[in-house]
Length: 475
Length: 105
Image 1 (cartoon, rainbow over the protein chains, first blue to last red):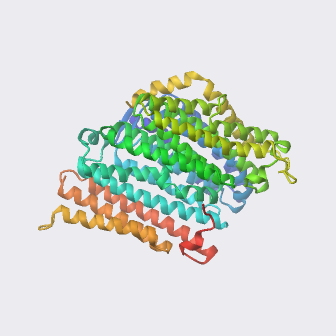
Image 2 (image 1 turned 90 degrees about the vertical axis):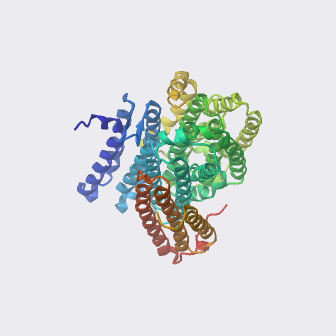
C-alpha cells in the first residue's frame, strides 16, 4: 500500500502526534514537574507551526471526503499562528493556577482536539466530515469553558455553551437532511451539480445556515456569546472569539462560494439582513458594557457583522478580503484579550473602571491595548483599517452602497466605545490604579508578536496579493 | 420501505418532532429537560436521514451511515452536558434554569 497520499493530511497527523505525546507525558512526567508540560506543549506546537509553512501538495483523500488546496493550507497556518500566540499568553495562567491542581495537560489536550476538529472542518469535502469536524471543534471548547470547576460562573458558561451548540448542530443537521433529500448526495461535488432553488432546498439551507451562525455568533443567534465569554477562562474566551469564529467563517465562505453558489440570489438577501442586524446589535450593546470580557464579546459580534460584508459578494475579491480581515482580526483581538488576561491574572480585575490610570502605571500594556483597539476600530496606520477598507471595497464593487454606508455608520459607533476604554486608560485619573507589574517571558512574547502583526500586516502589501492569488482556488 | 405509509407521513412526524424539540428547548425550566428536547431534535434528524435514504435514494447508504455517526456524536454531547450539569449541581444544588442567571445582559 502507498501511504504517501496521507502526507496531504500533514497538519492533522502532526497535531495528532503532539496530542498523543502530551498524553504520554501526562502519564510519565512526575507530579512535581508537571509545569514542564507547558513548556513541552508550547515547544511542540511551535515546531508544528513552523513545519506548517512548508509547501504542500493539493489534492483529495478518501473519495473527496477530505480535500486540501493552497488556500485551505494557508488558513490552517493562520489558525496555527493564532493558537501559538494564545498558548504563549495563557502559559502563565496555566502555570500559576492550573498546574497545582494537576490539570495543566487537560487544557492542551482539549484545545488541540478542538483545533484538530477545525482542520477537518475546513478541509471537509462532504457533509459527514463537516459535521464530525464541527462537533469535534465544539465539544472540547465546552469542556474548556467549564474548566475552572471551582468557579460557578465557569460552569454556567459551560452549560450555556454546550446547550446552544447542541441546539445549533441539531438544527443544522435537520437542514442537512433536507439538502440531502433534494440533491441525493452528501458530497459537495455532487450537490453543486444538482442543487436548485426549490422550497425544500431553501428551507434546508436556512436551517443549515442557522447552525453555522450560532458558531460565528451572528445576530439572532448571539445570546450565548457574552455570557460564555464572561464566565469562561480568558484564554478560552479568546479562543472562542478568534480561532473558533475564524474557522467557522472560513468554512461558511467555502460552502457559500462553491457548493451553495447556485442559491446565491437567496443567501445574498439573508446575509444582507443578518449583516445589518449583527452590526447594529453588536455595537449598540457594546456601548453599555462595563466588564471588559463582555465588552470584547459584543465587539466581536460586531466584527462578525463586518465580515459578512465580504461574504455577500461571492467573488474572488470577497474571498481574499475575508481571509485578510480574519487574519488581522485574529491578531488584534488576541492582543486585546492578552492585555485583559495579563491584568486579570495579576490583579483579578476585569472592569473598565479598573483600567483608569493604567497608562501611568503600566505604559507598555496600555500601548498594546491602544493599538489593538485602534486596529479593531479601523484607524488608519494600523492593520485593521486596511482590513475594513478592503471589505467595504469588495461590498461596494457589487453595488451594495447602502449597506456600506450603514457599515461606516457602525464603524463610527464602534469608535466611540473603543475610545471609552482608551480614555479610561490614558486620560482618567484613579486613586487606586492597577499597580505596576512585570509580565513573564511567555506573555511578553505573545503580546509582542501580536503588536508586530498589527503593525506589519497592514503595510506589507505583497501579503494581500499572495492571498488574492490563492483565492482563485475557490472561484 | 414500509407498506402503506408514504414518505410524506413520516416526514410530517419528524417535522413535528423537530418543532416539539425546539419548543421544549425554549420553554423548559429544567436543564435536564432541555437536554431531552435536544435529543428530540437530533432524533428527528436521524429518522429523516434514514427515511430519505430508504425511500428516495436506496442505492447508496449515505443517509443511514450519517445517522449512525449522529447517534454516536449525540451520545458524546449528552455525556459532556450531563457532566457539566453535575458540576454545576455540586455548587448550587439546583438544575433549574433560573438559578443559572448570574450573568445577564
